[in-house]
Length: 138
Image (cartoon, rainbow, N blue to C red; front, side):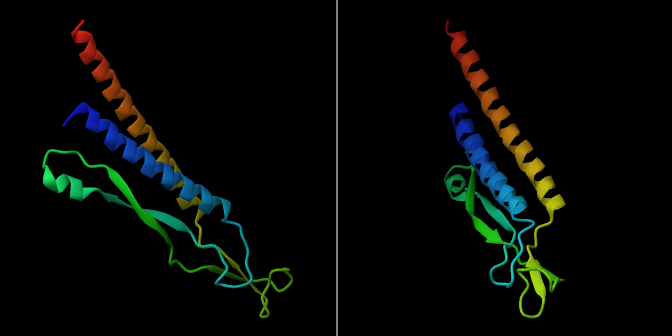
């Protein structure tokens, strides 16, 4: 594997973790949203990643990056709360809150942030190795 391929792999990892961080931030921002119907209530979203195996199938020794296949909504049940005095309550007196677990989202954010940092360190190490290789010729 060429050192230049390392930049592709770490770059795809940084891009994927950036999507993960943005999705997690959106979930946290909407954690306290309230709605009067199940259909309009925010649902937690999660990115789906896939290693780019199609590229790797042609050459066994090639490194593969990460591809964001899409963002899916959680199918966990929404929080239903009886609050007839709330201005957003439906005709039966219920309000609906998102299925966002803030503690889980914070742990996911820390994990995504550290994964992003690791990809940055890999790119920096590859850059340093390339610079040292160029210095050998001097």
